Image (cartoon, rainbow, N blue to C red):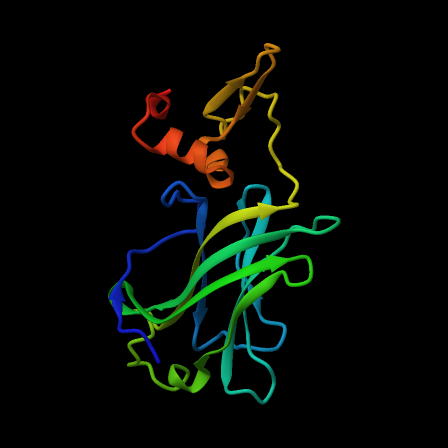
Length: 208
């Protein structure tokens, strides 16, 4: 059953923090007069979160009335890995109102690097109807996915923990051996409830 329309401000492909977890929005726009759907489909630009790259994929199989939407992990890691993904697919229509909201909560792993909806919308709901509320004022179909990541297992990191100049680092950890590593509070909080409370709770470390 479809969710009721709701107001949604325009987003771009940039990373945006959400409750201390990494998140991003990917977006594709289709001109209903010039752009068609096929089995190969179209891909959005990439978003990178914690060294993992992601794309939105929109396609339509031959003889199928449905447009399909998927979130794809583009980074390949050797061995076993898994990551929990929470995503929301939506169509952004006139006035920035979100329609056909579909939520996804899945664990992606080395045997399944994509997730989405194979019956997201029927193509005839907008291709022959310029008055459709699903279209923008300039008659485009806009599909977005907003997603966040948690519980990384076996995924190699793109961080250099010895580089204090990395702009993603906002905390330093000093050990008894005087060894110092630099890290991100948000990433540490994802992996450790202790760090989550320390950095985002009512502790002195929150502002250090």
